[in-house]
Image (tube, rainbow, N blue to C red; front, side):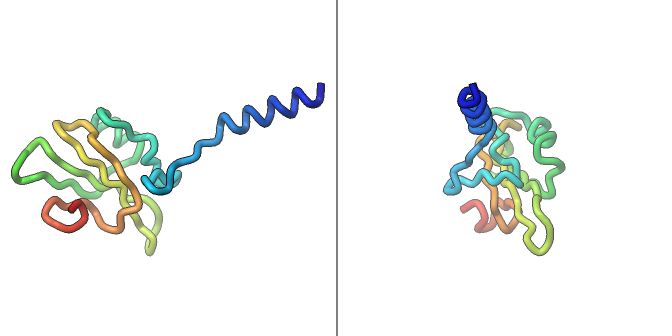
Length: 107
């Protein structure tokens, strides 16, 4: 009987643990793993909070990116979410600068 209880507790503990792939971002602190393709900007805002920066692709008004800060100074980092027609295309974390279509951050 004790063995069943222990196995059940171990199975429950494993089911609740979420492991992210460090090569693709997904830090727990940034909450980027909760952002999924197709989400609206408002839904992402509910998950990540207010964005600090938004930039638009000058060649296409439908492309935009938003930067959502996380962490504390001096280790402030950004989740960068790419949108097309106000829907998520991709999201990555651990950026040291906000997104900028004209700069090196997204190149």
